[in-house]
Amino acid sequence: SEYFAGTPTGALDLPGFTHIYSGKVRDLYAPVDDAGEPRTDQVLLVASDRISAYDHVLSTPIPDKGTVLTQLSLWWFEQLASLVPNQIVSTQVPDAVAGRAVLVERLDMVPVECVARAYLTGGGLSEYEASGAVSGLELPSGLVDASRLEPPVFTASTKAPAGEHDQPMPYADVVAEVGADRAAELRDLTVRILQRGNEIAAPRGILIADTKVEFGMRPDGTVVLADEVLTPDSSRFWPADDWEPGRRQASYDKQFVRDWLTSPASGWDRNSGDEPPALPDDVVERTRAKYVEAYETLTGRTFG
Ligand code: ATP
Ligand code: MG
Image 1 (cartoon, rainbow, N blue to C red):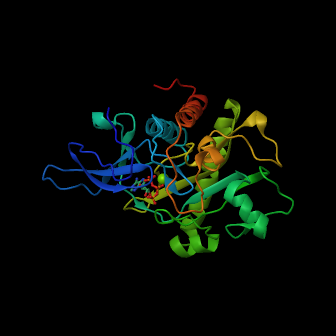
Image 2 (image 1 turned 45 degrees about the vertical axis):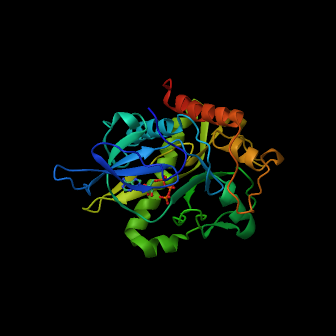
Image 3 (image 1 turned 30 degrees about the horizontal axis):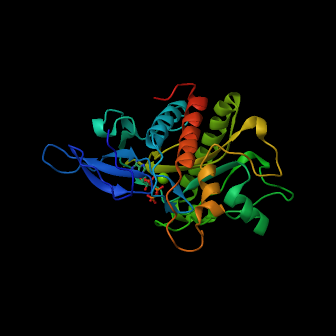
């Protein structure tokens, strides 16, 4: 199928659906009812091949990425079904987006990026080094890059507008946003999802260092797992046999892209405000292979 993945504005003409929103990676469509009106209770969630890095959507798509993310999320939703209800309504979708789309419940999204960390790294590590805390949560002293956090910690962030960086969100701010009971529910669910994820991933040789999940609410107030879950876009996957605290870990995620963009070869200055350049073919191919490898290693299935 010809799926236009170049920019977030690449909405498709899908019979029976109307485009309502595009994020960095996903395009959302509402099913149109018999009277020609967009339904408000369901949404078609289409994962494009767009990849973002350093808060930019790159001009070069990664072939099959949208399908990998969609199929991996579907697999995880099933693994996690006893833990948390999920958004999935149906995998019957228009041919033009087959494999990369799901029909989901349209939820009232909780305006919090729910992050859990089982290992300290990335932005969390930087915060810790500067303040001894992550999202306002004080951590023991002496932790280093890739130190294990047991049990995992909940470190929320705000949902930043397009092009801006998510900001750390202290737990008290989550309480102020959704109330004490709901905040505790979101925190416990997020931590359990990461713990269950690691129980399943460990025998397959993968550590899930951290993850970001999004929840939404049904009209009756039930908290439901939405968006994507435990994918290479939302999580850091590390090869377990390579884990060694005190240094940066090799990763399944977008590391090839990030490394190339920040290398002299790209000619791009992260702080210039310029759009990043197109990716070279070998970076595209290696990144695609990593996404497929993550899917195959976790699910035990062959991709495609
Ligand atoms: P943003 O939307 O802030 O640009 P993003 O770039 O990560 O974030 P995408 O993943 O590209 O967004 O798009 C998915 C969008 O759909 C997100 O805004 C997400 O909150 C929203 N979403 C995910 N699942 C649902 C759902 N079940 N009901 C309603 N909205 C949803
Ligand atoms: Mg997203």
